[in-house]
Amino acid sequence: MASRAAAPLVLVVEDDSSLRDFYKAILRHAGYSVVAVEDGRDALDWIEQHTPAIIVLDLTLLHVSGRDVQHEVRSHADTRDIPIVVVTGDDTSDLNKNELACVLHKPVSAEALVETVNQCLKFGLKVRSGG
Image (cartoon, rainbow, N blue to C red; front, side, top):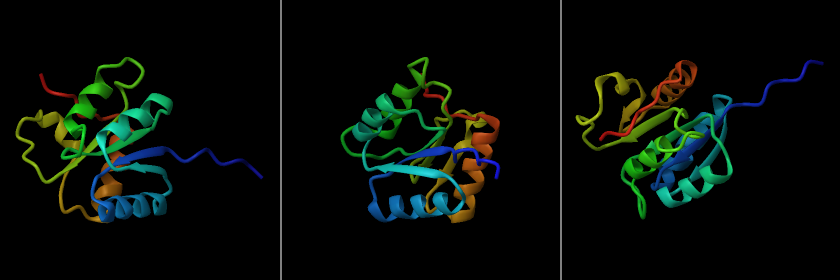
């Protein structure tokens, strides 16, 4: 029997527990391995020890904002190429139009989440921090 490749690891960063559980369930059902944390500080601590294939990131988080997480990920050579899917209810007019492929506006459907993660992972798309 041929061995299967390991499922890509998704880090979900969402402070709303019901949304976090929804994203985890949907992505696991789609074949991904998923780790989920509730705030930006936990995300950065986790990323120091592990390298996810992709990050699903809420922008409005406790302690450390999603924008700060995004900036920190982009500022290090070993993490800067990790694709980030921004999931937000906030205005994203400050993002480059080329980056919008990896932005989802709440509320998010299961289909949109899986499709966006698949596309951003496949094409290595990422949202770069502004500034």
